[in-house]
Length: 118
Image (cartoon, rainbow, N blue to C red):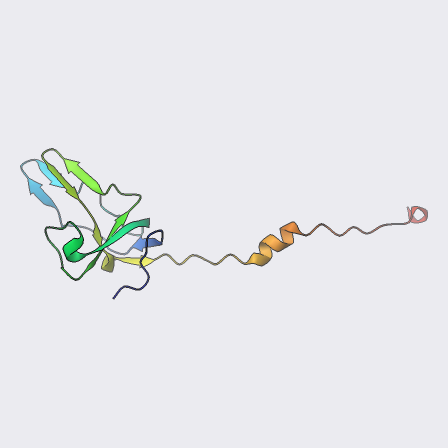
């Protein structure tokens, strides 16, 4: 079970290519797929049967992203597209140390020099 995925979490696509396209006449969806190493932000999550999916695993977790339109259309084809969480990993972002901000807020120390020493 996926323990890292949640709305707002940024993740990276680890899949090199997508060949899961639906074609009807000249229309093909999805029209936009995640790119390998692309950083995406999770918009929503659904489990297989609830993911508005006509294909896929009923037990898999599917992700929608803010950077990719959830509803994609091409000609006569239109569908809500989410992506299998197995093809993504959480983005490893360095933690910001609060000490950085504390230093910015501290006033600079001034050293007073007597007038005689100038």
